[in-house]
Length: 151
Figure 1 (cartoon, rainbow, N blue to C red):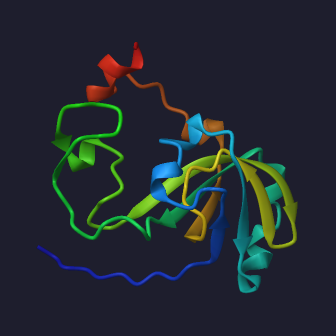
Figure 2: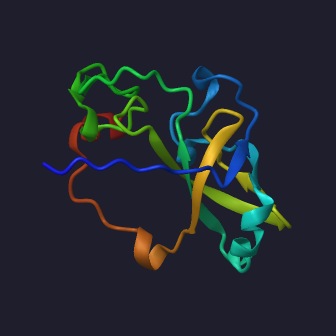
């Protein structure tokens, strides 16, 4: 087994109306909340052309997630335990999260977005444009969520 360690640094901060993890929507697709992504000045040049996209991926650190990782968890939308990697539960070996949000406007280093589902002051690691030619896949199976999707 190869043991690798990575070091990442934030490229910005996500500002939202949510002060605690308990206030956040379960997924960005279920959120209509507005937020602002502040990209640090040294990365502003990398935003050029982003305003041409209606949606973007935000990659971030779940900085308030408990450190203790359980490999069997009960997802927020079910009562049964599953393996951690079969869920989107935030307490993970590497507390990485992502959201797809609507990009409403860019003003220099600030992105006004809609559909945020993270706590205020969440450290931003990366931004990528959403492209339906690459990012939409028909799903034949959705695992344990299948019985929840029809309720």
